[in-house]
Amino acid sequence: MGDGAMSHTTQYTIFGSLIFGVAIMDAVGSLLGFWSESGVRGQVLLGPKGLVLVGLVLLSFSTKYWVYQRTSNPRHRMVARLSVASILLCMGGDIVNANVANSFYRYGGSVKHDYLAESVIFFGPGYFLLLVTGILIALDTTVKGWVMYSVLLIGALFGVVSLMSMHLPGTGVFVTAMTVGYAALIGAVALFGCVVVHSMGGMQASLGVWLVGLGFVLAGVADAVIGAFWIYGNGGEGFYPTVRQVNWILYVGSQCLVIYLPYAYTSRTAFLADEGRGHSRKGNRCGRSARDSQK
Image (cartoon, rainbow, N blue to C red; front, side, top):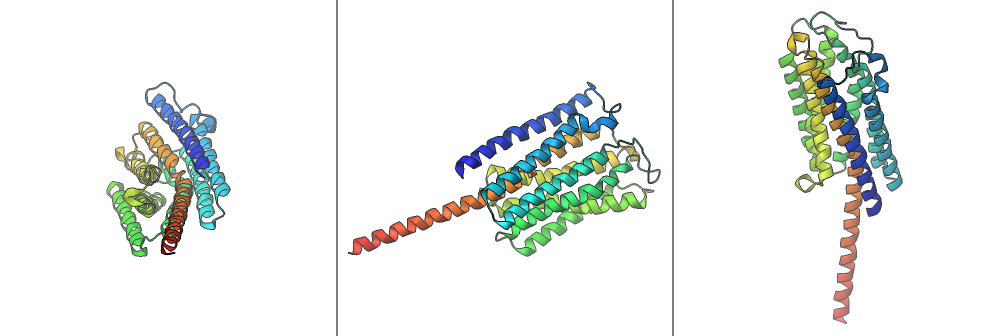
């Protein structure tokens, strides 16, 4: 398994870095005024952002394929499938956020970019599946149930309190309901990254596991930026388009990291199994030596 794992690690690092690099180049170029998206909204899927999204999906499928090649464990394969489904759903949310129709104030006069609330229809289920993958992994370890429930509750409460602190009077019912509910979910997702790291080694976890945990946290940070500076910021006008580019970098960085989750989980399980077999063989050798010395 070592050569295969190393091969996929190298592949992931190269393509993940390339995808993130394209996202940064696209965002920085837009911020510096080298190009603008305003004239190509109808062709957004053909631009750099579309290439990044396709790259993320392909990387996710590649990780799923790697897991299926290495193990027949139902839980591991479930985590890989849910990871792919999560990125596909989030891709739908990205398309909604592109606001191809170029329409604003759909649900009242307080929030200009209220179309962002519609993207929760995709991002909500997408990040819920990501949270489920984390829970499945935690359930496969010695993490106590009350710890998981406490983290989920604290994260959700923190998300709602943060959202309400930026909420504007006069915001429509639809926008309020969608953003409050989503804030609870993404708050739970962000904090659950700590449980994911703890369940896969804690302080002794590999760098890859820590990066996955960081990806969970960055998902929360990216959406906090949307709420504070895109939806409710600047009196409901939003700090657009600057906030879009900042969020894009955070979002893509998060996705590049959490896509690694099925691989990190399967690799760690295989490592522990190999380590257990090694200890077993060592114990058998010691037992034979002891018996030989008694003869």
